[in-house]
Length: 444
Image (cartoon, one colour):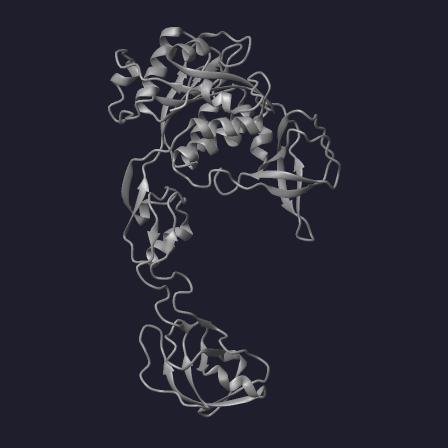
């Protein structure tokens, strides 16, 4: 296990007071380690989980050459002459059972989609393209080439080869693929346990009466939603006031119960330092000013388990399993502004959590879209602007911002379907210029 100091030493030019977004991602990739505990789950319960081992196909899929169409099967060598082809129909092959018999030259077999191709037949003409006269059909000239409309044995999955690899997220398509191999259950890594709490005396929980200077806690619900979309087991610890005793109890509980801890608020320069002081007391933590917008203040590290300490939350947490990691829990201390919380989660925390889940591809690809408006941008920081992406009449992707980009304006985040990612060295964007977009759809 590397310390914060050791990881920092591996980053050339590391400056915690002006840390580029790319260095944040690199730092976190060196900090986190995947869980190793495994479960065997029925397929219906495995959606969104991470595969714990390679899956090798025990047989060919499909097991036989078969027809991809309802039509007529024949030997493709008959197409060599290049002209119109007349064939006699000598039987019908149905899906689910092999046709018994032989097909001679000048003959064909009526065949249904999925039916096994009899020996010697390799081509299927769709039924809508032929003319039928009694027990014969006519195939138009230059319609087909040998092998058309035939599915080959093993073309989907070859016996003895990897069908899926360890670390892949189980999507609906991958569940279907496992089912095609006859697998009733699948080995997966256990879900990640993540504890979350908001900090601040100005934060109101839902149900509390409004008071001057206080705001309702939206971060608790956005973080909860993003964690659930990742398939994490969420330990909701509510709002923790700016009191050392309460903060210490919350961190102790979270480290004992969770693989990762997420907090919001209390990490900015100039704020009451109880939260930061407690992070330092209980763990190995770095405090950053990330060169990004929105966001900037962030804390990361590990919070140790304090075996001798007591916590009221632990006493009432019988439904949660104790964390077995002797190194404690990974900490992500996020800023307090609502949009800044979501952006830092999307940009940094989500990929780190996916890596902890054992996912082999934690970083989602960025799309390119044409900006339909000019966007102001200063080089020297990465900006994540809320945007809406749509499809233009020519099929290309277009994007525009959703208005006010203030870090506390959650309504513009709710209207967006992605983030326009303007990279560290990038300057102003002109109308018609392509930009990178991090899309929400599919998980958030």
